[in-house]
Amino acid sequence: MRSYTLDDFAHMIDHTNLQPDATRADMERLCDEAVRYHFRMVAINPVQSALCARLLAGTDVHVGAAIGFPLGQISVASKVFETKDALSSGANEIDYVVNLTEVKAGNWSYVEDEMAQIVAVCREAGATSKVIFENCLLAQEEKIALCEVASRVLPDFIKTSTGFSTGGATVEDVRLMREHADKRVKVKAAGRIRDAETFLAMVSAGAERIGCTRSIPVMEGLRTRMEAEGVDHYDI
Image (cartoon, rainbow, N blue to C red; front, side):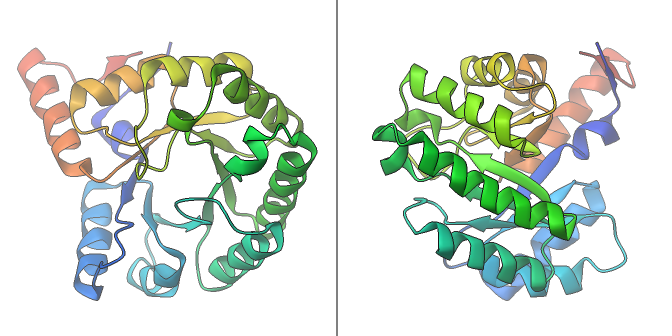
């Protein structure tokens, strides 16, 4: 069991805007909100890495680039290049999407090689690595097999979803990932986490990072709930 203050919860959130039509003003707003609420990271498309790095200079908010997003259907070499380019532009966290075609084919050597190459680039740069499974498109045994691959490669996080497919994070998937992955690999829940209750359910299930676009309503819901209960922390 761990004790969480409101600021602890905020610092678990990857504040997200991955929309293709996001403007510079949207990025400025995203970064300003991340600083004001003390979110852990802004999750953005790689092309926004340099801008967000400049906007967040001097703060402890990280810049997280989404690689091979949202389909994961590009070559390993392309993902590695995209990762290196984002890191050189100022990103210090990487969330990449696995190649689901190879997962469906049971080509686990390909999946592991891809993961190992991207994680190695992140380690060399001192950046956090996260592997996106897209669980809504996977069978139970495929999710478990991905956890086993991650347990060998040891990325920093495995992540439930992109938020752009047919479903998002579920409590059941977070529990499954936490059960089957090495304890050194943390779990990130993302996709359709829109209120305080869902946020707390994901944390209770074992998520240590939460990706969401509705981060501010989540935080204000947590604040209202804690104030109504007269508490300054939750033990989860």
